[in-house]
Image (tube, rainbow, N blue to C red; front, side, top):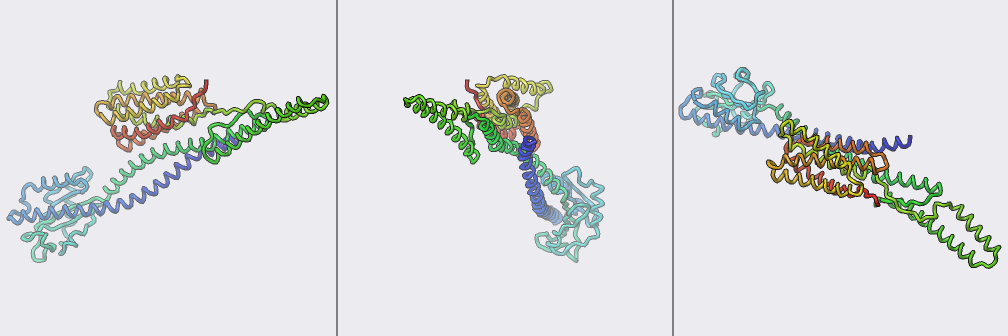
Length: 475
């Protein structure tokens, strides 16, 4: 019951960290979305005003040469070119003096078609033309659009100020519409990208935090508990190894000092008693000393006869972080071979399985060296994919699959054959979390091979550093 509750507590540490980080990320994301929506909306409105005034100025110059507005050629292509260069603007349109639609252009398939534009222009026909520039630049809300309606005047350019004029009606109007929903959609898309990338990072951090918590608290305290149970039974043969450099480590060091001090005092007492017995010439006194020595040593037990030895136990957590980061790096490199044909693409899992089998049979004394070489191979694959993306992407993808499988085989073999804590499920979870984090990151960066290769360098470099805790058994 105690072991189960302790395991639940240790598993809950990364879950709490992940939940807290996710809540913080959600709060920051919502606040950032609100601020970005407001700022982007204002920026689009200002851009729409600038575009509308530029079109208004060009059309008024053409009218100034005596060309009637409906007969100016190339207006449709002119508006369409502006719309294509400014995809964040919903539409541009030109209406005549009677308010009827003359030309329109848009840059998106979901924007109004010709018939809808005619209806929209007709709904604005009865509106008066403002007298001032500031009033002209006030947007009109229609059908989910914010529309700027600028007059095209005859005989006087807009830069001279004023609105449409009371005495002379405008020759037409320039309509520029922006869609606030597009701003929200753009922000939502970017927020989804950030969320996926953040979730990938949080998964890795939560898994690493769980390993750190187990290595810093759970494992040393469990070793201390076992050693104290042995001491209570009179066995003092083991010193606690792998002490962390913190308060827990000081506690383990104090226990080691206590055990070694007891052994030293026991040996000193036995030696002194033997010296006293040998120095006494009276047989009765010598026999009494010998009886006292034997009874004291029996009371102390046989656990202090041999000098205590420092033993280093192997745990699955020794290789857990390495397996997690190596799997993440390898999964980020694998999409470099994503442009293969069906047969070659199917070879990727086969290559990974071959690496898994090779890593599983590596001798125990070579596991740390093999782990270091695996991390170096992952780094080399990432660097080659960045340096020559067109020529080495295929090789980097296969090398990543091979190295990732090899790292997984090493970790599984270490947990099954050398570690004594039954940590095989945690290694399998680490491999799955690493692959899932890489998948989320790949979706966040839109499967960009170069960016994935650059991202793979960080977990590969960390895996190189985290291969050190792997225990090499002494022969």
